[in-house]
Image (tube, rainbow, N blue to C red; front, side, top):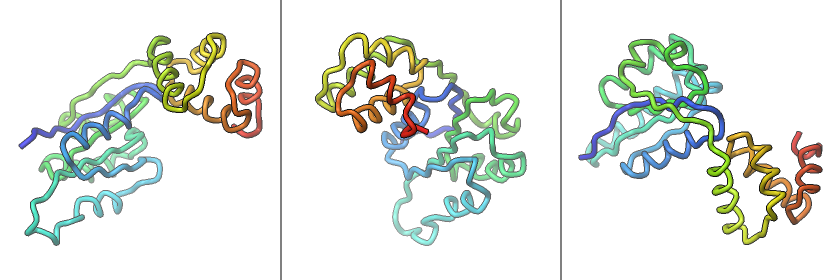
Length: 188
């Protein structure tokens, strides 16, 4: 049996917090539940905890709850999570851009490991752009790559969204097209 533990990813937007959570759940062959603390509540948590209880004859898979923006869950909601995390019924993976020491209640935080993720370097953004080039079978010139790297500011999601929007609007990548896309109402 694989060891599961709850943890919190703390880092800026676009560094892969959600992707890492999905990889972890897939590697453990777990049921993965993805909620945003902005819109989720106690009822959502209750449904996840109670899911599949009626099928007790089948071996149960671990349940991993990915709670994006965990800092947006209030104290009462975090308290509600605590028994399920403590008992191991749920493995919690929280994601936050805020310092969990100030935003997550102490009892819940003490049951989680905290992993600090840093913004992506220019080289890492360049690698992501190269993967998009390969997967989309497109060619991006050096000035456009440099422009994207600067615009992304360490956020992979920004670079990918800009590439996708520019391809959608213009069909090819150039600094001019990227600049027009950035200023376009399409993105707003």
